[in-house]
Image: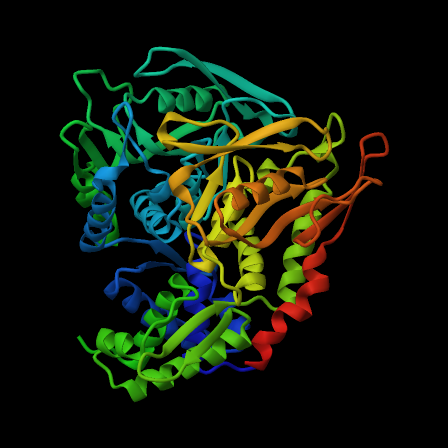
Length: 284
Length: 284
């Protein structure tokens, strides 16, 4: 069946969005729509300009016989700020404060459409880097990690606190929790991570960074490489040392005070890093 | 800025895919593109026919002043079968068999693109029913539950085995594990589920159904309603009683035998139910 341009543009948009960072040849589209490659090229130019204009992402063209296009997720600064503002509004609702000045976040982390957007944000930050897999630790960070992995087109591996019979052989490591200084352990199924993989760590919350440090040890244990760290919310240090240096956070929790019912949230490092990470895209 | 038809179709496709089951007014699109409603109607007709032709989904038109369009995820039977075949191929790799004839599934459950497709499958099955939230239990089912929730445009709530300080007040219930007959407990944060919500349970694996039965008790405890049950893989009963009657499964694990290195997988109830669930769509 032959597709008219309108039909091709609609289906192409859907197809590209479902295959982020994957090289798709012009021949594939030409066959799919029984159309000439020249028509496909024109279609892709239209998709590219709309994606860029609307801040959906970018299409990178790889020339040559084995070439094609790649959809790279991208988020405009104003859109990123809108997502951060929306999240901040949710986070500063005063009934979130739990005993011990903890913050209830489960509803935000389960808000699929919002987490999907946050995932796109992290994916856009790391989209130009070689990332093979996203790693997180059970339980709360999983939806965000899944969302980031989806937008990067890579699998997700989940580190657990305890080993299960359904995991097979596991590697277990001990680490020091940053805030409580307790020794804890985490396990990962032996076959879930290949040596040499480039691993992006994603988590929902980082205080001193002990858990993330644990995941870094796990990556070492598997002879894989740390490619980056993304956390939705980091807690500003209270004089305490941060165990992790380089990370991308969307928001920074400055203060939680149950007595004054005050929650202060600031923008995270994502925004300081924004220009450097997007430079490559705008010049390409 | 004015958008030509091609640009509108591309952006519209992206927007609709990101807002499943949500009513979007013609006015919204007319304003977004500075276009006449009549042009928007024509655009939507093109999107609808391509979505349906390509098996992406359907657009339901709601007439009247407060009307608009809704994108409903839909999966064609041949596509569903292709996903099931692909999953079956993965599941029957003989090195998946673990001691005790358990099956290693973590890599499949972490295969984001595949789980995204499986999520679309379950979402398409339940898309026409009133579902407010997807529920799962930590840990392995979370990516699938997230994917289903994403395609339905609803949040996900995660039941845990143990309560955490970051959950606030929780409701705890005891249930009998179907296969081992042990008493176990699960907890859910009190504020994570509203009374009267329609809840879709999603899990990765069901044997006798004890865990799912536990989630049903939890739903009762919150005075919410069970709207449906979806499991990626069900294990065929070995004479044992199934604790749950009505569910949608994608695959059925018939046999795992470590000595003969045999894994038999069959299609799940999704395919028996396919015609009844899609009838509404094809006639609308």
